[in-house]
Length: 154
Image 1 (cartoon, one colour):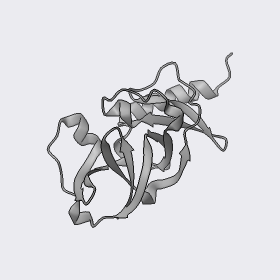
Image 2: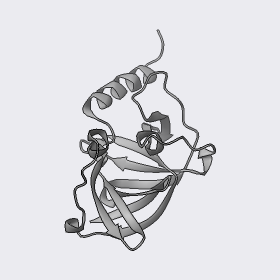
Image 3: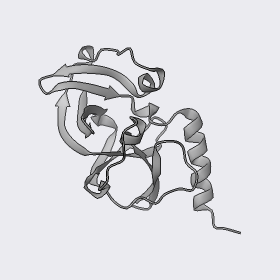
Image 4: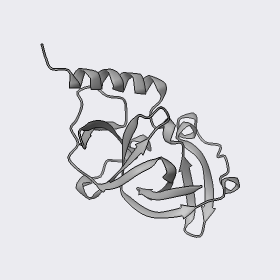
């Protein structure tokens, strides 16, 4: 499996490269009045309104002071929903053998995000479950907020 290695604070994370549409420089994020935890807001990607999940917030880290130097990874979740994930920076594209990715015994919320860990020459790599970036309840809440955002006020 090919993964894009990204940095989030001091943590190296792997994202399934087959699910990535693009990696772009950070852009201004439009905040939403009400959104699930970790969702920074929305961005316009070629006319498509896409929610932005900040992995620093998901990991309980402080947001970047200057997030215009961050990068955004555009991903496709199962079912076709597009999502943007804000990371500190994209580092490398690597190939992993699926058997190298070992389950990790961590707190329930973290284990929802992390599919497993893999030891590499550069250190430990956390491989993420892209579909877990938004829990089903968060997806529904976000879809509701996005519908309200798209509809003109009466």
